[in-house]
Structure formats: C-alpha cells, structure tokens
Image 1 (cartoon, each protein chain N blue to C red):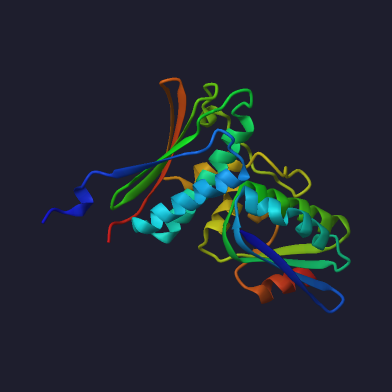
Image 2: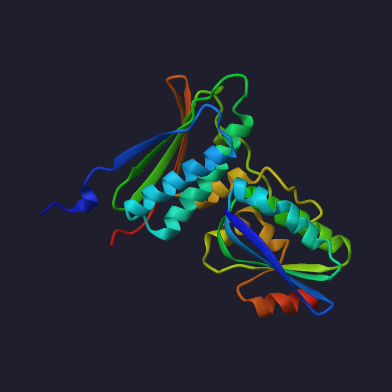
Length: 115
Length: 148
C-alpha cells in the first residue's frame, strides 16, 4: 500500500515523505492527509517521493492540489524524485515537472522551497 | 540449444470479478507484479507495466458503464525482450487512443487534477494499440528491453 509521514524543521519547512505505490488505491489512501499537511502553516513544503515505486495520475492530481494549497498561501513546494525513475516519467508525461520544481536530492529541494 | 530470444511469447490470463473495484484492481496489480517477477521482466519495465495497468483499469472501471458486468480480463504475454498486457472488457466500443492529445498546462493555476492517465500510458509504453473484436474492447500496452 502507501504510507505518508512528515517532519517539521524549524518554523519554515515541512518535509513530507511518501512511500509505496501510488496507483489509485494507494493515492486515495494518502490524498486527504497530503492536502492537510500542505495546508501549513509552514511556507516551504518538500514532498519526498524517492520511496514511491510508481506514480499514477490520481497521485499526480493529489500533488497538484497540494501545490495549489501551498502556493495559494504564499509558500513554495518542491518534490524529491529519483532521476531515472518511473515516477519521474509520470511527472514528465503530464508536464507537472515544469509546474512543481523537481530535484534528485533532498537538500536541493529544501533550498528551493525555502528560497 | 535453441536461442530463447526466438522462442514464442507465453501468455497468462487473469479475470477480474464482475464487481471490479479498488481492492480487485490491487489484486490484479499484485498478480501482474508476481508474474513479472517470476518471468524475470526487468524492474523498470515491470514498474511501467504496473503503472499503465493502473491507469487503464481506472479508466475502464470509471467509464465502462455500470449497468451490466463488463467482464474485465487481463492477458499478459512475455518473452525474452518484450512484455505486453491486453486489457479486454465487454463495455461499449471505445478507442481511448482516438482521443485528442491533451496539451500540457502552462501554469499550476491551469493544471487539472484529473484526466492525465492516457498521457502517462502513451509516454510509458513501447507498444500501444486498440482493437474491438468479438464484442469486446482490447487495449494492449507493452514494454521492450535488450535481451541479456
């Protein structure tokens, strides 16, 4: 299935770690919590997808909805994705990699979200 | 000894219950995953097959009609350099590949949260075709790799 957890780092940054397979059942299982976690109050949100085996369109929809929440309150969201993974392929296929910044490493993603 | 790369593909079938839902989708996905592992499909191609299966089943179940059972069936064919999955169903004839390609959103504000499944299937598949035969839709997607 899929799991979601988070760490808050100081007053500004929230790291959200998702693992498992984000097919429809997997994405449905974490979508509500992802939206709640994106609601803040921390302005910088990094979603680490390096533990996700594959990302279906339902999961991408949940990421888009979350990114809209973050940017809507003046924050920034960034994703961590393995460079040659199937997850990256899904983001590229839908053009979402051009809308939400994607990084291979967590430190780069955090810098971008905090900038 | 014969070169296994030239042996014909073997195939396996899986029938979903008439009440296809998320749990049944997951069982079908687990079955495909186990079949790929048993037949030594490389990880990358197996993940792409699972991803495409998820998108196709989601689409068929959402749009295939609910007034009568649609008799979903998977047929998996695997050889040394190629694996493909054919999803067939008895709902009304519909070729998803005839749908116009979506343009990618230019901003987060204009990005929709749904309707992206076919984009993913087109991008991830090396083989992709549709036929309507025997009163059933047959959508085939597949992946290729270099034989070891």
